[in-house]
Image 1 (cartoon, protein in one colour):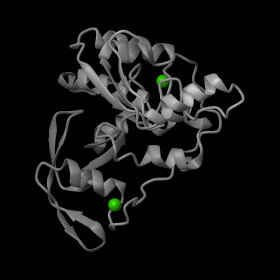
Image 2 (cartoon, rainbow, N blue to C red):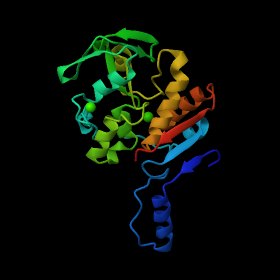
Image 3 (cartoon, rainbow, N blue to C red):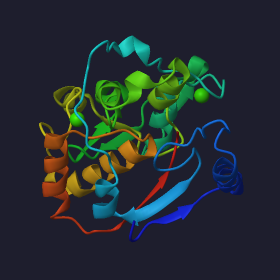
Length: 228
Ligand SMILES: [Ca+2]
Ligand SMILES: [Ca+2]
């Protein structure tokens, strides 16, 4: 693909080579875009073009199939608290049990500052149900847990006003975009990057909406580290 810079690990290259030399070798775990940890950098339009288009299917979905909010590093703060601490513009006070109080956050979806953690939700930028529909139904419970608590890419989880998060619910960009128009290019780039990071698909109406918005945005490079 033109414009794609792809750094594969030597191990992956060797796996690919040995697969060529020995067709009976076990299949690589790598998906079509690469293996976990691979870094892709490409212009926004190419990133959008790299997403496979498939019909979506919500059969069998339950929010409880994505375990969250865990405390992966066992420091007492769960994923929600970790995102709040990371994204605060004025740090909250942290008390026993990682109880947060005070502090100030910027909610980019509606271009508002919010005081105190109670008014904020942590949004899965690509909602759990949308992830399920577009590939995560095939994942292991551990992969779904990793997705639901993804602190390794700043785009994956975002502190926003509870009001906008609840208006978004599990909608994709075909039916919901951030009310603050000045944030939409960033939102679309982050949506595309998150779908690529997790090697998820998009549906036709979603692709149309992303294409329409992206056409009005800079075709800037998007950097993605594959999570799976
Ligand atoms: Ca933690
Ligand atoms: Ca969709």
